[in-house]
Image (cartoon, rainbow, N blue to C red; front, side, top):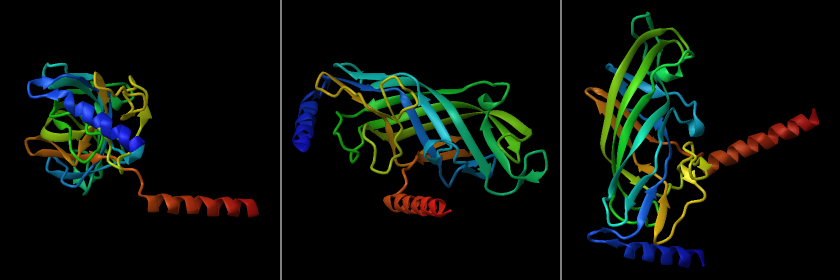
Length: 258
């Protein structure tokens, strides 16, 4: 019955899309994207790795702060403001950014104890077609721009500041899907919760269809020679979960014996 219902809904949503535009309204809900930094990331000529401090071992978190309404015979592109709430990277090699050779961290100025300017931007989301209810075919593309206010700190994310700066990063032509891949890390929440990436009370019918937003594959943001490559945070593999469960069971038995 679930497969029949999903197939029927997909058929109705497909009928809602016409050549002249969208007969139905599609809302991409406000929410957060949880990212993990990938190899190829480099700032000021130095390779950097992510520091897994956020949910799903994410090191970079971006909020899409407004819903994006698409359709109703109107444009199939909309824009939402962005807010970067977390960024923590560590140099992959010893380097000297002004306070001696060592390990340096990149953090947001907004994370200072005394506060600092917010790192904000915009994202334009293009909807190519209706939601197919599966992560196999992307729903469209997106472009993004960020004004990142950062600190470079020696030794730790709370270490002395060696440098501060403002970096403008942009991405063009990324793909997105309304449905998470099986391995994507999910943070559930209700509509209006911008910390969630998977909203549990979405409306999905032929007149109004709410969608979540999951970037597909890697996203590369650049500014000159500076590059930040990220992918969605991933859930532990079933085998890893089984190992963790087994270890917890052994520890529990040992404690009982003691």
